[in-house]
Length: 228
Image (cartoon, rainbow, N blue to C red; front, side, top):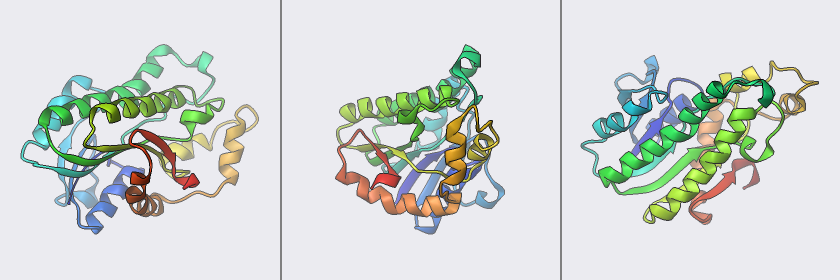
């Protein structure tokens, strides 16, 4: 079994790569950083997704000799500056959109052009895509756009099952940053603090158990792991 994943430097992405290895996958990964524990275990291409012009050739180089993929996980993403949308400069929002949305378009285009049969693609989305709580600004917008992007590609990649998947609350550096915010100004912070959360390792196990179940939903669907 072969898997391609982005954003394995830390948090959920690192845990997903480790879980994939434990389940017997041959892992191809693209990220800014390769964690020490994954060195020699994955086929790796260093790439900063913010440098959009470098993403396409990086995918092509990494997957040049791959004849098929069982699973693609579009995991890489950033929170951006948490705060009121009015106070966030457009260039900050563009940075979030470039990584969370447009880099994934470039990756999907490269996969199509490589003509590699792909059984399943999962884009890591978020409940923020539909909740649009105060403070989440560009992150919410980017994840809503990602959901739409994946639905559009599901119409074009008819031989591949595609899902936008919200993994629930995972104790990553991103979530820890959110929990530092003003609870009075941003009520969702209180709710997050009070809600059950999983470690990245727990979330990775749950997601791999969930991936086969995603075929029960139409390709292009947005699915929240907490609701299935």
